[in-house]
Image (cartoon, rainbow, N blue to C red; front, side):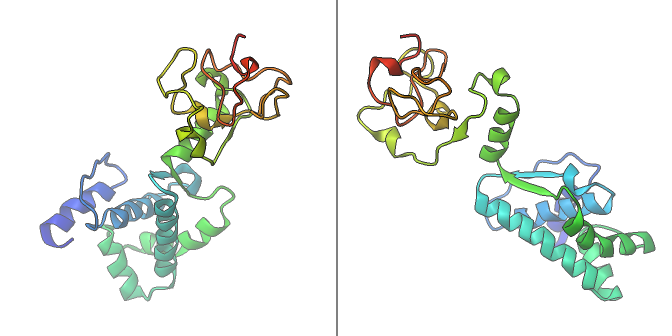
Length: 214
């Protein structure tokens, strides 16, 4: 990004602004997001007060890595280079911002609750784990990594609501212990978990005991 476009884009990195950026791949969105995070830290935000959410684990890890690398660069830059880096972020170089910029890398490394970069799936899973009853899922559930059973002939159609159906969440939600009638993990020894009339989670056998309310 150069010229007027770069100046306009930097407005989205202002900690005081609520911004939405729409751009195609390869146009510098990750740089813009990491710059906003750096400016938030420069403005006094705590690392654990910032949450960056993206679609993939790879993108989340890349964002975390870029923030760390840029803070390390600020810490070790010469005075002239530091002023240039701050100006590229849209920050006016002053004695206070220079001092703050050199301390951010150490603060990020040793803070008890670090900056969080995660995925939408992981963020939603954390919400469900904190508020399972409000969300209508079994407390203590775990997420199954296998998706092969979704296309198996024995699995019911993925229609929301009603017996023999399940939402996009329930195939991946399995409670904590094992059922004796099937190998679905369930807190009850002989009953499958109460998914409000939906079928059990994945890996369910086809016995009648695997149906809620039967």
